[in-house]
Image (cartoon, rainbow, N blue to C red; front, side, top):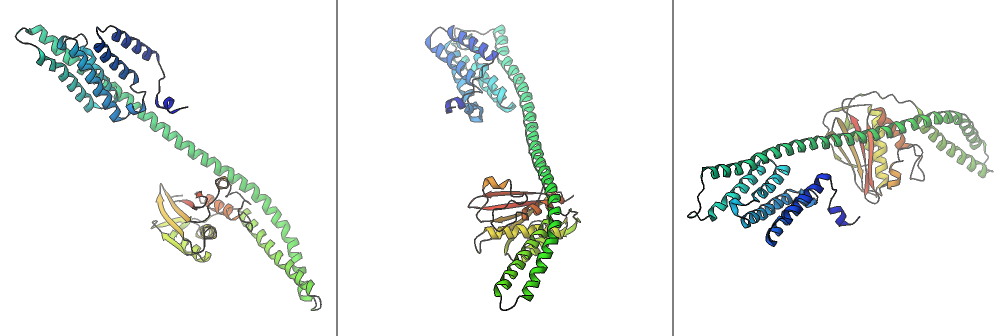
Length: 403
């Protein structure tokens, strides 16, 4: 679709067609080219009103009203002034103002239109023209009826604008509710995946521990009994023992992931928990704390969360690059942001980083962020990530202040 098609919104309704026909007939019934030009200009302004985006702005509407006043004034002046059969065209800008602007704008346009109409009295040769009582009566009626029409149209327009504002507010609420529902569905799906994988992982971990213990014991015995004359056997036994230790550590993480989570929520100093996590991670952080009071949480579990996130931020950053931690209160939650200036996360990976066994590091297990997500979910909170490749990442943890 080209720009012209986007700029104009001519969706013709039945009343629009009737209005175009009637304005066309009025233009045809004029007596000379100037009258036709003025009437045609008024017709065009009426037909494009509300269909060109610029005319929907305050300046656009004001410009349209002024042009209509000028064209109407010229047409009335050209066709007899006060006695012109076209005097009602001065009602068109008044109706336009009443439809789109407030009471003040409506009154202003009504006064200007009425004043423009009465100004033709200055062009009358009073030596040859006398206004009797009946003529004055008609003149007053002609001045008051447009004002009455303007107030009625403004009242109707105000009702329509109020109703439109309600519909817009309802639409925004529905959109927000839909976003919350999508987030809740994502959280439920993630929890279901975690539960299924947790059961599978727990079973595998328990089955692996027994043979690992046997292998470890045999390797240790081989290391102790290997003779100095067979260094190769001793070296191989040490490699087996080290690999068993690494595998056992991985099994332990599997069990941590599979273990049911029962957070003990107690008031704790959020800043102190973050500082302990940073100290354990051996990462210097830039602090910007704005949560002064205590936050209900399991401090040991949340310390593990912040330890993982701060360590990940440091690993993703260049040497000596800052890791910033900010806290604030927002909509009943304590928000904790861990911000780095590292390599960032590709957009296609951001949806999967909290899934178990998903990792972008060759030496990673893919359980760190899955456990973080599980702990945060267990606190009734949520975690989000914002990242741009090459510019860094921001992990945001939200903990309810009143769980």
